[in-house]
Amino acid sequence: MRALVLSVLLAACTSTAPTEPVSMRDRLAAETHLFVTTGDSAGAITAQLRTADGWEDGVVDLQLAGGELVTRAAPGGAIALTSVQLELQTIAIPATLTGHEASLTRPRLELTAPATAAATWTGDDSAELEVELALQLSWALTVDGVGVQVGAPRLPPLPVKLQLTGDGARVTADLRIHVAGELWSWANLVKLSDLELVLGADTPAQ
Image (cartoon, rainbow, N blue to C red; front, side):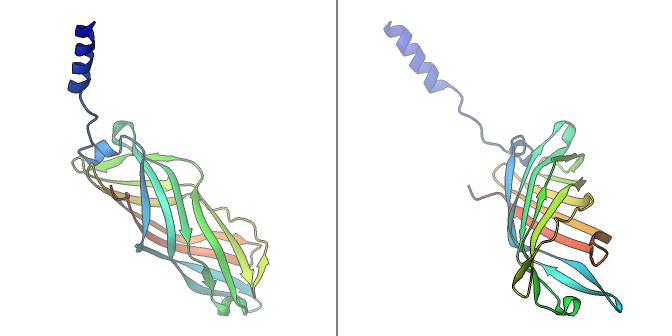
């Protein structure tokens, strides 16, 4: 009996401990959460309003308030994005467009379906890919301090360039969206077009 107990204890002491990931490829074998770094993120979009004199437009700055990307490696060297949640700061609409104080509050972009694409790897610690993401935009429109009901914009799939770099301990992301032309219109009165968005994201400190 003592011999059996001794052998069990010895096996437990000599068992191999779980190995920490060495490379970024190892790290991405499991879902990896990256959080938006607001200092490395910004963008712009063109807003247009139809008036009696035609279309008036203005460029609206986009500032990231936070967000998260969740990614993992997929078979064949591909990379999957399983979640994207981007929170924007309140967007002030130029008064030249509406003639009133107006803003989009609580703007948010969220991935509606996971996306996977082939990636180009440089070693095991760097990868780049291009993928189209189905993102849902939601917001609340406020005019002169009063909320106005506007349906959630239905966006087309957005082309994204994603670069991931790092190692087994840390992964950073650079995500870029560039869309030329019209993205969304409402009742032929309001249009959004020409989106530029750049964001950085990082795994939390260990």
